[in-house]
Image (cartoon, rainbow, N blue to C red; front, top):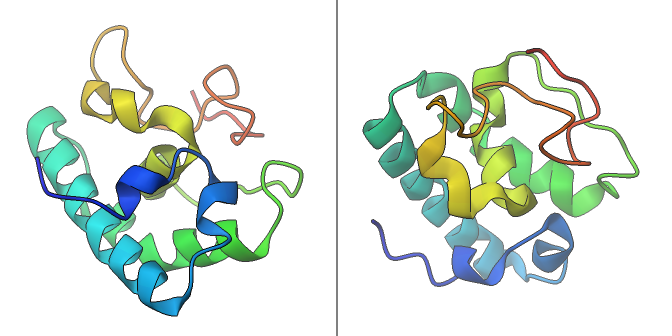
Amino acid sequence: MPKTPTLDRVLYPEDLRRFNRDELRALVSELRAETIDAVSQTGGHLGAGLGVVELTVAIHRIFSTPHDRLIWDVGHQAYPHKILTGRRDRIRTLRQGGGLSGFTKRSESSYDPFGAA
């Protein structure tokens, strides 16, 4: 597992909203490393999630999620979102029996207002 001291301070998006610019840069780098590590263990589509890491952090910092609803274009883009919304401890169960869904899923989190599966 990668070293992620900044990401370790984020359980939910409200945690990252008080970060300064340098902390946000570190968070983006660590979130990318965490996503790569998790998907390398569970399998899945990596490119879509990596392509939206900065966007995911920016959206969760600017908008008041889950009050402001966030819908992803494809489920694979939601992997970094899942890490930032209280599911990091289960991200290595992604797409596994009894684990996290590979898509957004309303029953998993109030941060998922739309379920694809």
